Every structure is written in structure tokens, then in C-alpha cells.
Image (cartoon, rainbow, N blue to C red; front, side, top):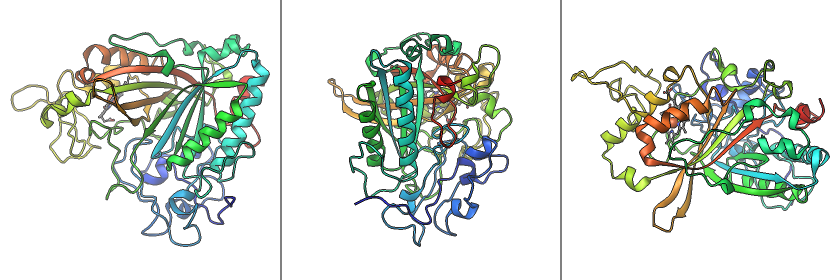
Length: 448
Ligand SMILES: C=CC1=C(C)c2cc3[nH]c(cc4nc(cc5[nH]c(cc1n2)c(C)c5CCC(=O)O)C(CCC(=O)O)=C4C)c(C)c3C=C
Ligand SMILES: [Fe+2]
């Protein structure tokens, strides 16, 4: 049975469409295009009382809880409702950056085969883009369709492509490698396994259904045969839409509300923090693109869970219950601004000197900022019985030399949270701009 187009397939809204907060823009608006053509706000929000509901305090792209419960009517049923939500593949920026995080993610990196060269890369990127666009629109792949996800709609599928530094030499593009794609420095306590990081080509595949994401990966992997081989793969998850009674920013496996203080689309300076511009040492082909830092960060959950809640909260600087900063009264809510100077009745800092939010804050790092979009992972137990679980940290930024690197340098030295973390794999990728209709991701690199 083939999946068919639904007559009234709702588009998946951007963060701003969900939050309805003034001053925010949706993915296309951030790209200067406004709401996707032909999609009304009503379609984006679903019918009254059903569909998409958003919290006022949501702060993070990808951290906004969203009720995508099926709307009544013709879109319900197989591929309808939540499954019918779709994110257009084409646009100024690639999909999977500004949209809310889906419930599932597959991350994968590939290495280019010897001899594939520039032509092999171009052909692969064309095929991958075509397939990603078809799957995101709810159409079957036009090659290697294995019918694994036949009954499902696109479930907000996004496929985001990244290029590792090693790609450029192999594809005869060394002169086009961005300077900012230089390897990340090693940080104290890094315990990185290169086999689970780096890679020439990177894919972030997000969907609200695990099978839809795995299906996309499988098809893309088979299309790469002979041109690029899978180097590593990781599966992650975030909160499933509709899992909470009220929209709340998602939690990580330490139980913290994670993603509150992300840069927000529509805020002044957002694009400068997240997207690349041309000029200076910044290549024109990457304008409108971004850089993605990936870190596989294992959490020492047995140690963490042995800590009393009030001590856990002092490690972060925010309460577990509602994410409110320790500088504000309990119950103030996660959107309450952090006051790093606030003192308790005893005169001590309300947010401890080594609290994660203090050490990571842009104010403490010369304004360094990034758009975090991480997913949890839980891959069973290690030989010593500890959970192999943590965060697939993903952060988009305009320049890692001004974003991730200075912040991680500081965290690795003075962050109370780092006692409970192990950085086990790492990757840095240039994320090209989005492709126009009829184009492919990477075209600006390969054809300009
Ligand atoms: C180098 C960058 C960062 C890494 C690595 C990192 C790992 C990491 N963080 C959490 C949990 C939380 N982080 C929070 C805030 C926060 N984290 C970073 C950067 C890195 N985190 C920044 C820039 C910020 C925002 C700081 C601010 O401006 O206030 C929070 C608080 C809620 C929030 O704002 O998101 C939590 C919780 C974990 C568990 C983790 C590694 C596993
Ligand atoms: Fe953090």
C-alpha cells in the first residue's frame, strides 16, 4: 500500500507559530519569507481546542512543548493529525534548525569513499536532497523505498545536512573549506572516541515517530552505497508532543528543564548568533548556513541521582520543579530572567559561582551564544552496570570560535555540572544553507 497525500495535511508550525509570542518569527519569516505559502495560521494552529497549543513561557527553539493531538476531520487517520504535520524541506535555512525538536532523532555521519570525488559528492547530495524533500512531504522515496513506514505521515520529518572538515580534501574542495571549521580544541577531561564522532558528512534526521526517522536514515544510507559509508550513528529522543498537560520546555535525563535560555528567533541579534554571513574569512557559499557542534555527553546518573534535589538545583542554578532561576522565588517560572548578582539572606550568591547557568551564560563569555537542540539517549548499560545514557548535545551557531569553544573551555574548568558528565564523542560540521525548490543542499559549495 502506498502512502497517499492527505488533502488537508497541516504544516508543522515553527517555534514562533506555536508560541504566538510577539517578536518571534517562524522559519520562513526568519528567512525573510513569512509563513509558508498557502498555509493559514488556522491550519498551523489546527482547529480550536485541538491541534497546536503553545505555552507562553517557551523559550527555546526545539524546547517548546507542543500538543499536536490529531485534529478532527479528513486529516485524521493514517498519516493524519500528528503524523500529517510536515516541515517543508526547501527554504533559506535548512529544516531542523529553527523548528521545535521532534520526539525522535537519528544522527549519522558518513565518510566519502575513495575516488568518489566532487562529482560523487554532488550526485549524492542531489539524491539525498530529493529524497529528504519527498519524505518530508509525505511521499515515498523514489528509490530504495523499503516500505517500513508506509502507514505513517511525515511526522514533522526534517533532514539536516552537515559537512565535516575532512570532506573538503577528499572532494577536491580544500580551497573552499571554511576557516572556522578548524578542529575543536581538546578540553580537559575529554574522553573522545573518534569512531563515534567526526565524519565527512553528517545527517540530523528528526521526526515525531521513531520508524519514520529510521526509515529515512535507512533509505539515505542505501542511496549512499558506493559513495559514502556510515561511520557512526546515534539515536535520541525528546518529549513526545502532547505528553504533558501544559506546554513546558523539555527535560533531560537529569530531570532538568533544558533549553529555556536559548536565543529566540525574532530577538535582536538572533540571526547573527545562529546563521553565517559572508565576508572576511566567511565563505559566500555558507551564507545562510550555520555550524553545528555535536557532543555525545554521558551523564553519571548514579552519582547525580544520589544528590539531594536542593544540591542538584545549585549545580545548575535553576529549580527542577519549574526551571525558575535560584535568584527568583520558587514558582516564578522558567522564563523569569536570571539575576547573576542576586544574593541570599546570608549574603551568598543565590546562583553559586560554579552553577552551570552562571558559567555558561553569554554574559560570562563575551556574549558567546548558540542555539541548543540536544536530544537524550539511553543505550542500555555499560560493562560496569552504569547507564550508557546522556545528552546528544547539538548546538547551531554562526561561528564555533565565538560560540561553543569559549563556553566549553570555561565549562570544562569551572562548571559544577561537569563532575557528572563525560564528553565521549565530538563533531563539528558546516551546515550549508537551505536549498530552493529544484535545488539541492550543498549546491552553493559545489556549483558556485
Ligand atoms: C558548551 C556549551 C554547553 C554544553 C556542553 C552544555 C551541556 C549541558 N547542559 C545541560 C543542562 C542545562 N544547560 C542549561 C543552560 C545552558 N547551557 C549552555 C551551554 C552548554 N551546556 C548554555 C549557553 C546555557 C544557557 C545559559 C544561560 O544563558 O542562562 C540549563 C538551564 C536551562 C536552559 O537555559 O537551557 C540546563 C538545565 C546538560 C545536562 C548538559 C550536558 C549533558
Ligand atoms: Fe547547558
